[in-house]
Amino acid sequence: MKLNRSEGSRVVAISALLFCLLSPIPVKALTVVYHFGDVYSGASPASTSQPWVEAVFEDVSPGTVSLSISNPNLTGSENVGNMYFNLNPNLNPLDLTFTADGGSGGFVAPTISTGTDNFKAGGGKYDILFAFSEGSACQRFTSGESVEYLISGISGLMASDFAYLSTAASGHSPFFAATHVERIGSESQSGWIAVTSVPEPRFATLAGLALSLWFGRSLWRRYAKG
View 1 (cartoon, helix red, strand yellow):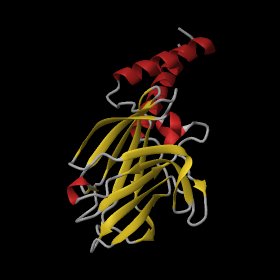
View 2 (tube, helix red, strand yellow; view 1 turned 90 degrees about the vertical axis):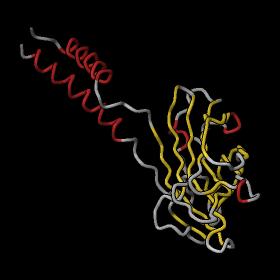
View 3 (cartoon, one colour; view 1 turned 180 degrees about the horizontal axis):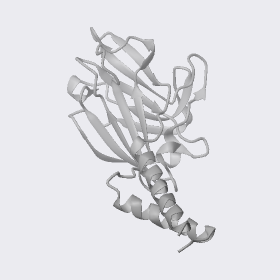
View 4 (cartoon, one colour; view 1 turned 60 degrees about the vertical axis):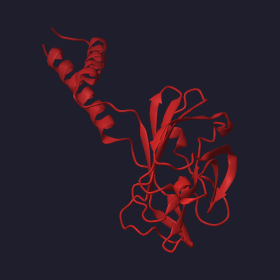
């Protein structure tokens, strides 16, 4: 049996879909991972292991994104103070809704504020501010602790909408995200840490798509020669 181009295209599409459904390699949602490891002002956290702080945005469903913030390599008395993120400039950060969705540790939940270019850190103005507690040791967001949120409120919201540079201001260059780590060393020092680059989508996503297309094209060529 020999297929024409239109029939062959349908074979590629259908077989790619079947491969995605049946393949042991999962086709994951887009994930934006922020590794806070570039100190641009002040002291560096004590640990030589990075990232000191990590934030992960991941697509959950159309219009809903999960955000997980953790401190895998802070040590001693170190804690996160403020954390800053950006939003696609075509979207209004005031429309965002944050719903607590888990975490670990005994810290006080952060206060979340939004507004276009409302929050300045270093050389940039940001749209989203997480302000963690400055209270007693048990209230602070410290080593090994994490917090998770579901973000919604904007139709079609995606993880990639949080992968934008801050608006330029005086001082250091704009960054994708920034955070303030406090109580470093003798507890009298602090450091401003930035994210200067955003990684590509996770390899499993691309691998699943590439293998799906290869599978479909192989079938097309086989039957087109028939």
